[in-house]
Amino acid sequence: MKDLLSARLAALSPSETFAMAQKSSELKARGIDVINMSVGEPDFTTPKHIKEAAKKAIDDNFSFYSPVAGFPDLKKAICEKLEVENELEYTPAQIVVSGGAKQSLCNVILSIVDKGEEVIIPAPYWVSYPEMVKLAEGKTVFIYTGIAQDFKITPQQLEEAITPKTKALILCSPSNPTGSVYTKDELKAFTAVLEKYPNVYVIADEIYEHINYVGQHESIAQFATIRDRVVVVNGVSKGYAMTGWRIGWSASAQWIASACSMLQGQYTSGPSSISQKAAVAAYTGDQSCVSEMRTAFERRRDLIVDLLGQIPGLKVNNPMGAFYIFPECSYYLERSYNGRTIHTASDLAMYLLEEAHVACVGGDAFGAPGCIRLSYATSDGNITEAIGRIKKALEKLL
Image (cartoon, rainbow, N blue to C red):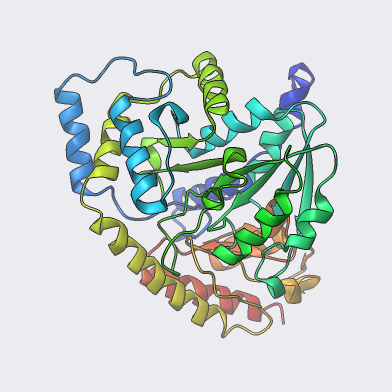
């Protein structure tokens, strides 16, 4: 039946993160105690005042179609958030609200990337970036980094990757999968490069903005010389524990926003009306929930860094944001246990799932075949137990 699929779909790869989560669920269904550290999802519940706003929206009969680009009050709240938190000025007409930041990203890529045009993607990267570029019939150009440079690209690497066919750079900070965060000075250095290439756009994925351990979030959109070429993508899923509500948004130049709205109007229309009203409460209500969750994530970050650092052969950096850690594990490749040889990081992830009953994701899916990704968006107890299991499983490979 695969022969009947479109070439567009046949070219796509399945999401490794969701595939590992599915395998984890299958083991759990068989009664096996699996600790799932494969999915990037806060383990907190949505704050009460946000849920109350959604209930009120239901009672107030917000059950009809919303405008394609989102309700005016939500777009206004997003503009106010951008001004207060980021010192960025946008009008509601420049905001497009979508069914999650993933749709916002895809909207932008499909709107500005044409067949054969190049999109620069720093590696390690989120698994969906290359697939979205494939859908647009663009070409991915990867910039590879390693743990020695904290998984961050340099201005020189960026400039070397730019060609006459380059259309966009996707920049994720704080990063999924590494947790790395670009500083203001680093972003300024990228800006100095991009100023030379006026036809190159920046898609700034800032969905983990509120989960950073360095203080003020820095957006590349702050630099006036390239501001009109930056598209900021964000949403409520990570910072407000609202993954299932599916609300993301983009802020961009008017012509890009109009294009995204036109595209969205043809294949999904406006996002959930109830979820939008909940998002208004998220942005305009009490923000203490954000700092409380961030404090918990930082404590968990410190815990997992310490525990992983005690395992021989693993190289671990200290992520400055998000809730992932990306240890370099090549020391354990080409080792065997019980007749099984670990050739790749994906093999290692499967070994850890079956031997230690801990679900993680191999770095192959993120463009970093020597690493694995662990999400520490789980309890301190689960983290301690999981790393203990991983340590015992890896000892068998020594």
